[in-house]
Length: 225
Image 1: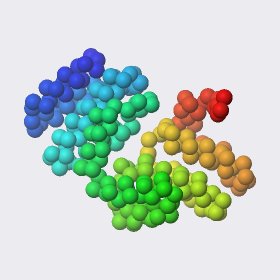
Image 2: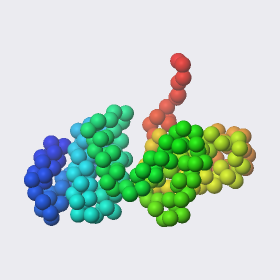
Image 3: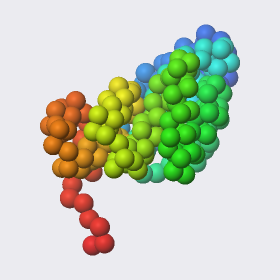
Image 4: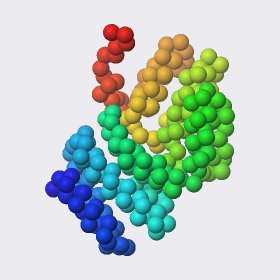
């Protein structure tokens, strides 16, 4: 079986409804996951898995199974498209995000505040979500970025205890790993340890998990030639 099989099963499922549609999509998903496990960087395998997950999300939203839709949406988001983006898939992801995540507008506001340098205001949004028990795994990736931008920008104004607390909060998240964000957190910790002897980088690295090193992390870096 190959990616073409998955696309055909998804097409068949679109003409079904209820449990028959769900069974067909789950069968397609099981094949797509196996293909993705074997060939995670094959473009058509990635697209086959993505479209089955998208179809499942819409089906689960229709039957008000938002927890299941959220789990599939999370899996959709961690497909590693290796530097290219399919515009139609990205559009579907944005549509699904607004329908699955009831806190979407607040998260979007926090992300904009953070990107514009208003780090404390961005953190305040997440503190409210946490206090109201509204922070789900769907929000862990944007929260991780907000933590990173804050400690990066305010490093000189934060005590070592405060920095370690933010790093602890980040490590408790369940965002995608390995990832660019996870590697940038490690890079921050490495540089921070060079000027703060009380920060034990080796212990942090073990907690960060060396298995999360990406291919790019193991190569020499270049800038301006």
